[in-house]
Length: 334
Image (cartoon, rainbow, N blue to C red; front, side, top):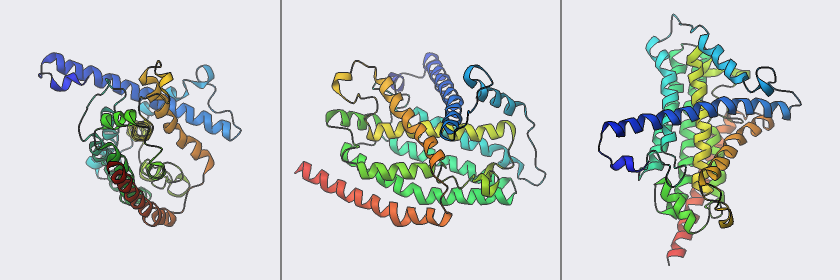
């Protein structure tokens, strides 16, 4: 698919873009549908419950039924809400979550958008989804929604910094912001999880906050804010928020696999006969489902501890990791 970038803008090229976009969207919808199913089954198993088991064989169609229910539910229009912002907020939250999937290199040849600054583009686009959350919370004209939106803004500002600083260690080792080149750099040496174990821990913790997952799910916080910024949404607009949230799970799992675990590379050369896309999906799906395990294990943190952890723990550690990486790079070059 890289060849499309050099191809002239003919109708065949545009048709290829459309088909690739539809395939990517179809995979995203499939992932969201059955990641919710796996989440509910996993939580049920860990909490000694059955989980969904009625609709379809083994409950496989339960999420499909829930989605159809959301699509036919009435979309409540609030009299005192900012109507325009209230309507477009779910779109702002969902579209970036879908677009960032095009930046991820799934194999050496399966790359939808192979940018030289792909990593920078990922973070730039991903940050827009938080604007959808803030816009929805503000436009709802509800105090619980507004509190959830303000919490989302605070987490975005606080955890985006250590998240990016942790990734800079990988950029220094690979010498590139191109995600494909980062994987190729690991093929020439070793996976970056080894020299960047501290950066990986910082990245993983900060990514949970960016995804609003337990124990950092403050913007929703059902027990405190009655679902937070989503409290006034129903029907397909609520579904758009859910789609964006679960698509980001796969996107962040994919980014973790690319940055620290060799992307499509096998763990050992003897396993190279297995297609690269299989290795990539195994790694990405593992890191996409780990937050479900944490959801059943960890309680929600206090909001003041959330801010303290970012500014007084993760940020200094990210700077230490960056300094150590610079020293390691200097020694290796010398």
